[in-house]
Image 1 (cartoon, helix red, strand yellow):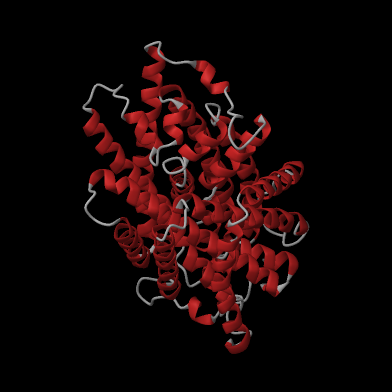
Image 2 (cartoon, helix red, strand yellow; image 1 turned 120 degrees about the horizontal axis):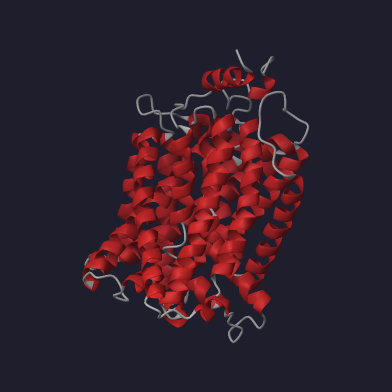
Length: 476
């Protein structure tokens, strides 16, 4: 039996989760999560920060994210287990408080992202049916995705793949509109080089850095892929190609869509719109009714946002499940439904926290808090994830030479150092630009502190994992 086969067999014995995700499904899982997570929701914010050349922010942002993704690819092929970044930090540093901090930071980021996307979903939904209150739409949306995730991971991933085709179709419509606009001779290519320095950012470099900060929410999502390692068939082969390949394809699409939007719609219009890509469709360039196309595109955008939110909600209970087995959070989160094989306790907990975020954020907004709930939750997500990405790259470098007695992917070392610098630079600017986001981060981390105290004072140490860790099994 080959090393890969042996490891896969041992993984199956160690895990209560069902190994059913193929490499092809994993590629679409990554692509769908990254594509839908920001281009439909936050492109207006990026255009407002940079100007017509906002495609540069997407190109640079996805480059930093792809380098970080290569670190994840190396680590997930060494440790194909649920829990992702938390597991890698635990392996690299063996520090329980640090592992817990990474765990709760990742959960907080994922929950903030779910909340931001749910609000974005409600914004597009109002284009189709404006009667229900936005908060109700958001809460029902989250609840339905919790139910889908409970049904099972295979069903969730197949649903993800189908929705990925739909969201890609929506972005292709935007690119087609851009191509027709150019062919008609109406495009001003000079707009693609214009960087706005008249606003809050007085230099081109700062404007682009601000755009990267805003756009980075659209780059996130690839880290969720690592958390289904325990449910992937032959993760040693599947992950490098699917994870990095999905990100490269998503980055190319982002750049082309950004250029199409900038060439078709005035930057000022994009910057002030809550549904910026819808403005492209409303230009009436395609030979169809503008109202019909606007409705169709709104439905496509709803599916795209659903896709990304589905993946984030898949991730949250699996992180809790993996770290419960490591005795980092209470063991109740390691419970698996006997029929559906889903981590149902973590699902309920995650849905409740996201719902609370939506209620609190809506109340603050209606009370005159002066916040953009989508933008604020997106910023919280970016702050937390950038810190995690930097730590994961350090963990990857620290784990070099360890647990390498089976096939694994090796990331390029100089690129990893470049990715580390990139993540830290974007993190610094994001906090400098919006320091109040740290208060929201602290609030979400406070939820994790409760879990930590519960495990510390009431947990049964050494009982979280029912099976030995992979690197404790002789002969692997």
